[in-house]
View 1 (cartoon, rainbow, N blue to C red):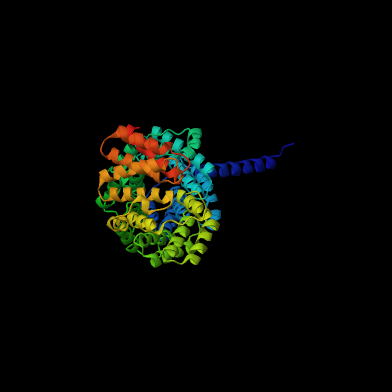
View 2 (tube, rainbow, N blue to C red):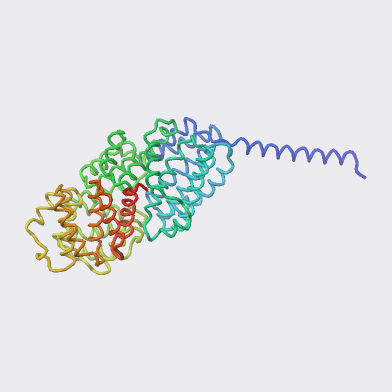
Length: 505
C-alpha cells in the first residue's frame, strides 16, 4: 500500500529532478555569441600575433560571461596561427584535438545567430589549414568541404552577414586553381569554383565599410593581398594595397609576415628585409622562425653568403616543422658550395636527404638534386640568386657576352637561355624576353627541368598583360601540357589561375 510519506518522497525527488532538468535547459539556452568589445580586443591582438595580450582578453571575456561562445572561436584562431606558422609536432599533439572540442561547444550555441554556422566553418577552416601543414590532406579536404557548405548555407540564411564573404569567396577563388595532382579530391568533394566571382566577393568585402568588415579587417588584409599576388597575378597591386591601407607592419606581425613574404616573392629584397628588421620585438608576440627564413633569403639573394647561412642555420635550429626544411638545407649547401667549401656543402646536402618532407615543390626539387648529386653551374647560380633578389643589372653583367656554347652540359645551356630571358623580362626588355623564352621552350619542352614550363608561364603572363588573351591561354595551356617536370604542382596552379582569369571564369 502506498503511504502518504512515500508519496511525498516521490514527489520531492520528482520536483528536484525537474528543477535540475530545467536548470540544465536554461543553462543551454543561455549560450550566446556575443562579439563584445573585449572579444574585439582579443581578436585584434590575436590577428596581430600578439598572443600574450590576446589570451588575456579571451580570459577576460570568459569571466564576463561564461556562456559566451565567441572566446571559443578566438582560441581557435590562436591555435591555428600557432600550429600553422610554427608546425611544432609537440604542440600539435596537445592543441589539434581541441578543434573538435570547440566544434562540440559551438553546436550548443543559438541556431538563430549568424555566428552559429559561421563559427563552425571558421574552426573547420583552421583545422583544415593545420592538417595541410602536417600532411593530412584527406582530412583537410573534408574539413574544407564542410566549411564551404556551412558558409554557403549561412549566406542563404543571413545574406547581409558580411563575414561569410571573405572565406567563402577565398575558397571559390582558390578551388579552381588546385593542381592536377589534387584535382580528384576537389571533384570528389563537389566544391564549385569561380575565380572571378570569388575574387569579386573578397574584394568587395575587403574594401567595404560594413561594420563587420571593419572589425575583421586584419584577416581580410592578410588574405586579399595573397589572392591578388598568386591568384590574380597582380603583384604590384598586392603591395600597393599594403601601402594604400597603411597596414601596420611594425606592430602587426601577421601583416608584416605577409608583406615581407610578398615583397621577397616580388624580388623586392630590400623592402622585405626592412619589414622583418623593423617589426616590434616584444615578447608578447608569437615567436616565429620564419623571420630567420626570410632574412636568410634576403642575404642569399645579394650573395652575402655568411650572413645568409647564419640565418638559415638559425631557422633549422629553431623550426620544428617540415615545410621548406629541405629547401633551406639546400640553400645552406649552396652557400658553402659558392665559397668553395665542398666538405661542408656535402654535409648540408646530407641533411636535405634526412630532414623535412616533400609536400612543397621546393622541397621536392631540393631532394631530387641531393639524390642525383647535382650541383648547379656556379655562374648560373649566382645570376639566378641576384635576379631572384631584384639585382637584375648585376645578374645581367654576370652573363653578358656569354652564349649557350659557353656551357658544356645541355641542362646548363637550357638554364642559360631561361636565365637570360628572365633577366630581360625584369629589365623591361620585353621583346628580347619573348624571343628567349621561346628558345627556352624549344630547347626544354621534353626535358624534366622546369625551365620550359616556367618560360611558357612567363610568356602567357606577358600576353595577358597586353590583353592578348587568346595567345595567353595558348601558353598557359602549353605550361599545363608539359608533364613530369620540377615544380609541376605550383606551375600548374598558376597556369590554371591564368586561364580562368583570361576566360573570366
